[in-house]
Image 1: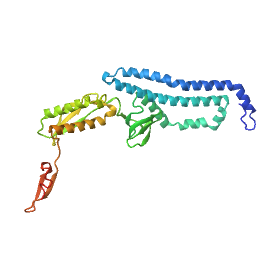
Image 2: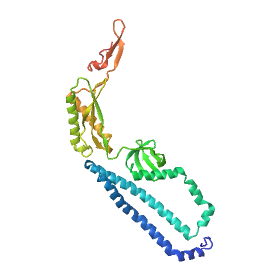
Image 3: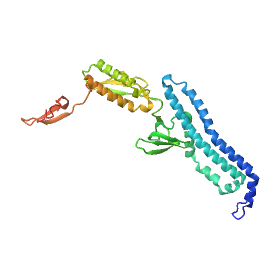
Image 4: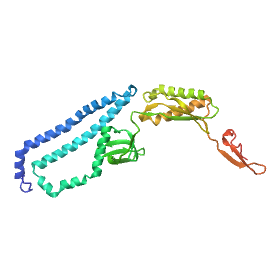
Length: 314
């Protein structure tokens, strides 16, 4: 081992003269590994995930390609970080070996302390991180629910998942604590809308309006590619105390699972109003006193004439 004394650098200089080739060789090797790893991993990941995409329903081919891109980007980012860490660790090992510093480190107990700190919880985090990536539970950019939080995945490492919720708060979730994960943006989602019409409505006529609105929305260029199926009447649902429930269904791109139902409801309300189809509503009961003997009376406010705001009051 060369002398590392501040006042005497002759030993270190002699060591570097004798081992400069080894140091340069390892530096070039580690740099090449770092530079070449990501493009090689990219081609491998795309090739493997493309096989999965080819088995998907042709209607979902475009969405499947988007999933492949997200998976490739997530794994590439993780591989890049892992390779960077591996390069640093190998570099440290090379330096420790060349300078023969292992006895000093062993004497300090640094290795034993590092092993002790890598406890069961950390090991579990890394194992679960590997499973999450291998199984493809979620990727960067997905909206998920995991570890008691819900939001967009911003970062995935083998130890943790970083999620930003709807309020902008960033949560760091240890992978070992994730027992159930819900992915809200995996390829497609269901469009499920309930429309309750008043009793006495011509159900066939209301159903025709429901289907027409779905077709118009599907044909709208603004929603091209966002709706997978035409929203349509699935069935007549419950006959409740308020009215008749019409079940509307379809499939949308997963990222539009919130916007599409809202837009459909807006269009359906306008269409029902134009066709004179009444939506079911609950009437409030107004309690007051009559003008004669002061006895209590009850009036259903849904039967009041909107043009006479004072009707039913005394």
